[in-house]
Length: 457
Image (tube, rainbow, N blue to C red; front, side):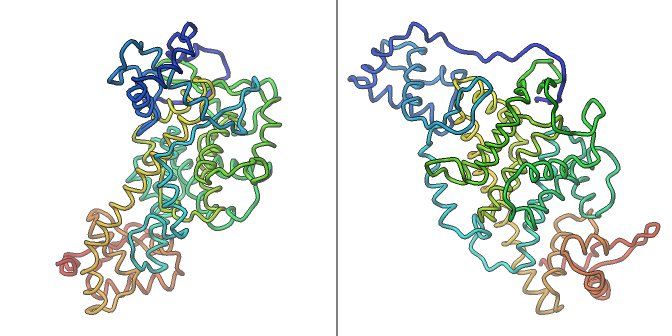
């Protein structure tokens, strides 16, 4: 697993394995594509682009191989097709080369499904969700994203402990909890306020300040915009190999102005699907690395900002970082391939779209399981006990996690209700002997009793 940190000194740089294509005859490749064995060659090329956009390190093992063609020639043919179909992006590197991208047809139906659905109901199993249920799902997604995005950057708090800490609403006790809290509050701020704002340098600094509040860089400094002549490197802690050297600030500062124009839809001359564009912005901030710390979290936060701003509300349900965290090496390689294989950003776009699709599937599975198990319980709780949606959802949560509990403050935070309303909810459940209260110091915690099992029969 890659462990990233930021250093201000040169170390050994990563070198991507590349085949020697200098002596490949491009005319012979074109003839092979159009010749009698062209169908096999074209299938080989298509297989390199779908279902995963492959680099040479995997593509060289693909089968079958058309007769009289070497693996290097096959890779040259793949590159040829990609290049003639590539689109120039607005993202450029320090040497003036523009990143390109290749429209992957496999994802067109996915984009269509996104656009045919209405914002907040996107990907959701057809059901009439009330406001409380939708808010609970958004809170779940926000928590999961905040935790996973922080863990990608080194936060060591476990998912279970992090969720408990966020639910309780207590102050963070260490740097990891502070990072998670910052991410959580930042995503909530996007949903409640920042989604309505235009991108600007001021907004960029605000978002960075929110996710790095009360945290320090590995050098013990407050995270900030880099200074001129201040190099910074993304390094694997275990091997010491440099995976990315951030460009000079003399290049970064004007690029941030271009980034802002792109974010405000003032640059591109042809349509880019909003999901693809949000991924490009994620990549661009990661490449520029304008700050001394927090760049990865900022890049993922901007991804959400852009989609929420353009009414893709369902992404509030989807913790993409939770899926990315299952394959951090592939996340790193998506950056590396894009930077090192002729500025082909398709690797990064492909990786992220596939992770979004995985997040959709994970959410659907969670939702279907939750719905099927809770329908009968809901009917019984309403007809026999006259419970409201908050009380029902609390009992469902406690039944699903017998070791958990709640408190007045947690109930207020999760359901965003007043102290009086939360107290009324909990007291009624205690009076019905569905919950029991236990005092710990100055706090009172509520636990499920054996009686709630009757509701799930």
